[in-house]
Length: 421
Image 1 (spheres, rainbow, N blue to C red):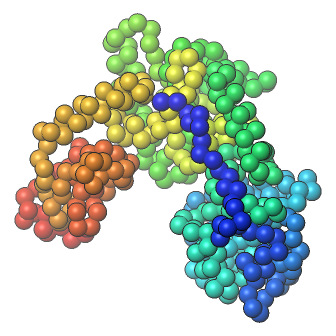
Image 2: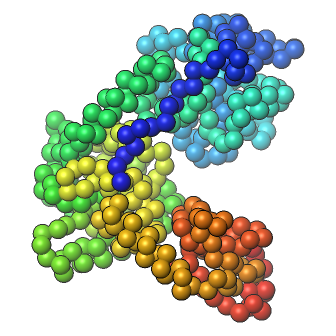
Image 3: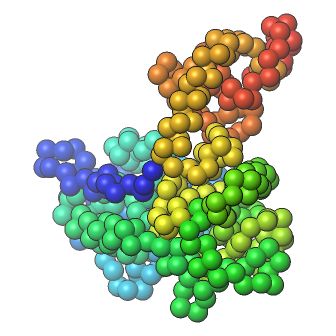
């Protein structure tokens, strides 16, 4: 399972007849109202900037909200990119389109933003923009070019390329994708994990330096995680258990095959890193090492925990290591396409022996066994809160779903006494 060599086209250069085609002369019709021809500046609550001042610039419409953690996380990244672009004199501006629930939340969130905003009170303009650009989730960033073209998936681009994505044209993005393909084709563990001043990793004692080259020939998991992250706190103990099981299994087989994990920390300070890494049995990049940010961009890591699997030749097997661990536990090793195809066939055979329906201890309604072919698909298990795919027990009435392995069968009377759904 290789990284996507053919990412979908991120630029939609729209035709004259397309309703999304934006000309600079129409910014007023997009961003103004009948009694407002300005946007709020970032300097003070009352400062205003004329919408006409945006003519000739590339504009990012930023749909976001203070109450949603992924928005706050992306906001920090976007601020860094924006400030670099402004310091370089780039002809670019961002306009915040708020989804905040009240004026206080809007003002609090806006204080962190160095760009422009549509006033919180202008509900009609915000609704119109959400409808026009079919915004279905946040954070969402749309780039409007001076030539009238529109770029979607701005959030993905900023996470993936940062400031290098500017000026957000099709030609620039094609150049970046070409460079990315070359990097992945020449990828090795050494060029992934070392820098000119460091060719080692830390072991669990943090006293011994382990050469990166000692991992060559092993299957390696790069584990992006942090102590402050609640999903990480839940997943890390599971990963530790699976790690030990895989290591024991390989030791029993002999033959020199081996598996290792490298912790790539998103912790905010050395103390948090020390405390969190102290619970782990594997290797780690030093806290705050500049290669950490490079790896996050290189692998387009947009959320943690994330487990990237590298094969013994130093090439990427999959970015879905966490999901595969949740689905198959230690049996997922070595995470290759061939192994996953085998596991899927085994799951199909096992499903033939499962009851078509049953009652679960955590839900009052009857659950039906479904697969991707008959109403199932990717889901979050309501019992263990981890992702699943393939087969599941699903409540056809309310959508409650659990992994087959999480199913705790009870009689209908016991299930009926369950108070929550």
